[in-house]
Amino acid sequence: QAALEIAGLKKTYKGGFQALKGIDLQVQQGDFFALLGPNGAGKSTTIGVITSLVNKTEGKVRVFGHDIDVELDKAKSYLGLVPQEFNFNQFEAPMKILVNQAGYYGVERKVAKQRAEKYLKQLDLWEKAEQPSRNLSGGMKRRLMIARALMHEPKVLILDEPTAGVDIELRRHMWNYLRELNAQGITIILTTHYLEEAEMLCRNIAIIDKGTIVENTDMKTLLAKL
Ligand code: ADP
Ligand code: ADP
Image (cartoon, rainbow, N blue to C red):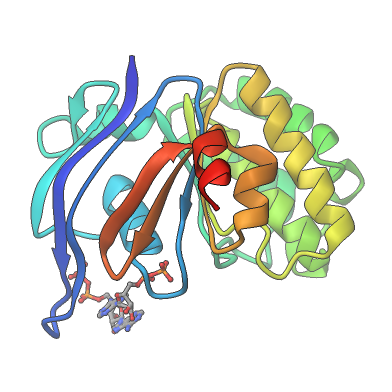
């Protein structure tokens, strides 16, 4: 089953800049998928459209068959997003941030607390659970963003440049954690401008450049070509 189907997607920003020129993509359930491309290629715009943070100009997006134009809430319930920028309230503690997030999705408070504890422990943040999150290191903040994206137990986790500015040791930890999530059945889609990162993690890959998909294949086939 397709977790994500994108057809003929175009985005022109208000100033007239065409960031996406008609892209088609399919990601199957259970996949570990990379959207690779240089800065400015349109990766964040694509993710923004999928998660309805950016309005598309044209095209179709379906999440497990649910058209985002018709069943947006349903489609969103399947998706967990880890954006590039830290966009949580830095005065709040991780536990509170996570429980509130679950609340937006209607998760019962008691369940939310248990879940938050599970993810804070898995992501090595348990000791910081009750401290203002501005005290966390950059790597911890990034892990908090992952925990937050998992709080409604999405089937698809989407990460925008998850290891940008992350040191090599933490990068390895994050890669392992993402592999574990994928092994548990969560479909993972990440954007990156490092081929190495895609190579280490992903089974399938699309390469985007100047708003166009220029390659869409499995990792092995791509590497054989290079
Ligand atoms: P990537 O994530 O691959 O670096 P983006 O999707 O962020 O690329 O950006 C694609 C292009 O669209 C870039 O040229 C960027 O400057 C432009 N862009 C992004 N957001 C906006 C916006 N809100 N208004 C106008 N142009 C934008
Ligand atoms: P939309 O068409 O999805 O409503 P907008 O064109 O309103 O998006 O842009 C969203 C925000 O991104 C605006 O606040 C805009 O100032 C900002 N922005 C503009 N140009 C860029 C750019 N090149 N890269 C990133 N963000 C940009």
